[in-house]
Length: 205
Image 1: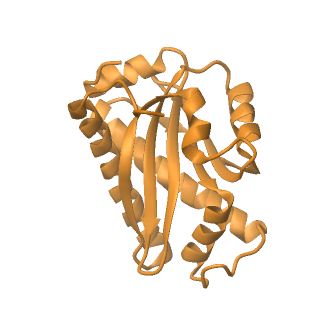
Image 2: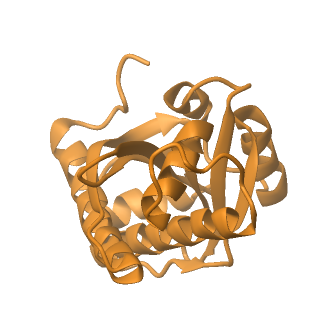
């Protein structure tokens, strides 16, 4: 992918600002949950075609962890927080205070941890979008999937209906003094919802 969007630099900066606000909110929430500091940053943010999601994350056959949250309101969407499989294990280690590489399987506690962090991140980013757009985003209960990337995306599309071809993406990095983990936050709008979001935040598609 040669660029992240057809947005100009001012518009991308505005979208990154939403991402930074969301990351700050999420870092605070995680710190309260874990009683220790977890940092977050937003290296990139933009608007991309849906079919670019695979290239951003990896390959269709890659094992990933995906927290899928449906969002209702004036701009219905599907929110996906996707981590490469090995990153998901490292994130569990980081969040549970384990040594890096200690987690080797996804039991009930590990899955619950990933779902909860996905829920926190989604809520934090949606709150930032709501703050900037004055739109109401209502998240449903999140679901965790551990599967190949292609299967995860196909399932998300089939179960959610028809979506816009354009997707808002915020690349996130979670880190502490020892480890750094990259993930991707995708807001996949239903048909017409993207226009509502971009208009509300002052961006043009």
